[in-house]
Length: 218
Image (cartoon, rainbow, N blue to C red; front, side):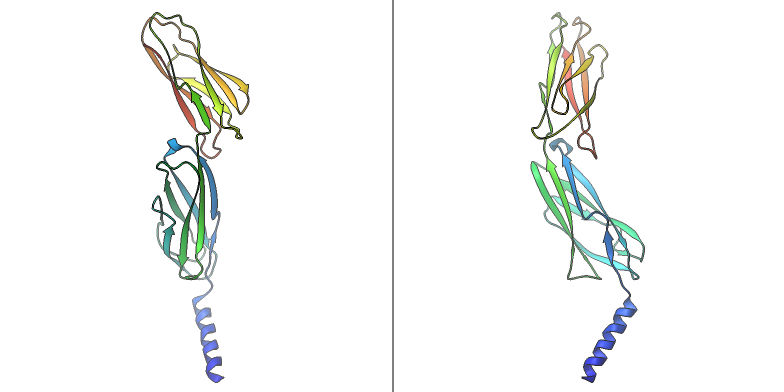
């Protein structure tokens, strides 16, 4: 009985000497919308040591080889902040994907934190055709491009901008958030011309996408 009491007292003294340590995570679960053209995503998981003792992050273990994670350093003093930086490379992946990163620390080695990254990889906007052209000498009549938003989504076109004033582009809204038409009318077709027409959208919210279509006189 005396031995148990002494052991309990020793454990209390050890805990008191070590102090209380804890990492508080800002947003351990994060969700994003991306397109295949983005290729990859970098996500930052911020944390802060809210305890009274230093905390050392022992391991970061991503759920698959397409995801990596790194830290600036491993040990964080009381009140010190840091972040785990994760990279997810899409490859040929499409649709919704969930990647996790297991974080083990010295203050809770048997109870890891699971950082959760969720990415839906899809083209929210279909452009058809992506190229309009005229042959030299052809009548300088407008040609149109259809912009169609994926069913169930809302993507607003903020503007269209042509890189060549001789191939200006005009945006027409058929149904806001769902369907648009871009018309391109050359000044004339007497000589070769080319233009990149930027289609600026409001989607995704955290990284609005710009699409490119092409116009040529050839």
